[in-house]
Length: 309
Ligand code: NCD
Image 1 (tube, rainbow, N blue to C red):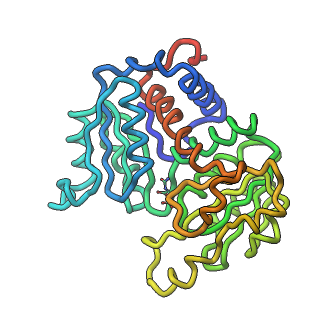
Image 2 (tube, protein in one colour):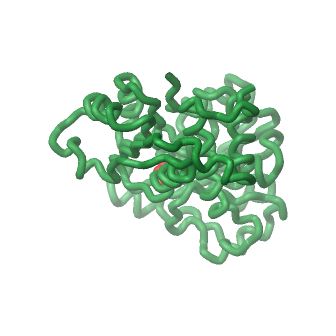
């Protein structure tokens, strides 16, 4: 049985096939509206979420399936002390597939070990968020027509931002990708990621000021400072408004640059940027539904013949 813990669990070819399928879902939604009749997804969310949980639920409903789950560990038996291993053994009796978000790094991996159904990591602490990466890549591919030969700027909380860790892992497999990591020194991208890039001879640089590199970028990936992962509030307050993208700062950016953000946004993108044609963060949310539909079909073995090369 296949689970999805990290974007690297899928080969580049498997991802490309999933993006083709997501494109077909976008163009022909009615063709997919009953493939999951009688199937259920369980959404087990021990951490807050709007987009990820609701997009998994929308994805399953769009496929004709049903949804069970909880939006908060506090209303589940976790509050009575039940382990993730026991919860997933129970949920395996109720659902066909499960998406789990958990504040502890590795919790969905434990679930996968004890599960009888495919488990999708919907974000584990400050570690990985593979389905956000599928969303990000599908957005870039759909709007720019390719996934190679880009200079990608990733800005904000690169230490705790799990979306950035998964995104770098996945993009590093495409040709001609160059990364510019833009963060305050305290929120640098983890060493294990820069070591992976160096070992593969992938070009990257680390800078503090967004203004210095914005003109070089083909994609600007903004992120929120992850308040919930800070050890003290003073550090969070000091760093939270370190970056604020405004129309003024975009003056030097390329006309074709894509602005992405996994959302939620706090202050890091001014609302005056929302109407800029380069702002793609709300389109990204819609692509997140298509790609999760494609993922559910893939993990349940229900992909239509023509995409199962
Ligand atoms: C992200 C997450 O949960 O890691 N949100 C999301 O899933 N779209 C980013 C964040 O919370 O800042």
